[in-house]
Image (tube, rainbow, N blue to C red):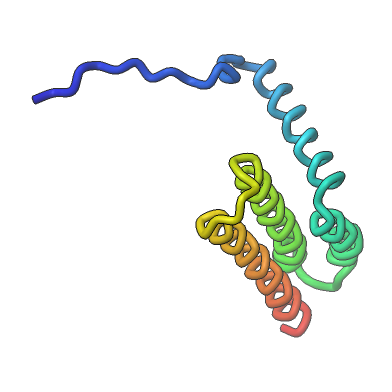
Length: 130
């Protein structure tokens, strides 16, 4: 028995194409970075860390691949922090009540940030100490 055909409705925010879509995506991304910087202490701290570590990586006497690993580990931490912040904002938007699943989602996001920090420390240690 086959299912009746159902139309799949996309989000009303979808629909832009070509350069318009690219410009909108860039604007939304910049809005997200501004919001994270304004509202998230951890992201601001990681921006300071990035402002120190990325230039430092560029001047380190390591190979191009080594520099890429050093910078990539910093950017990876920032990416994970942004995703964690998005998870937290979404959970809080749904409900501010204490709930086991909300705590689990936030704790798992926090654990991802912790692993990204451990990754950063390991990459920097391994690249710099050989």
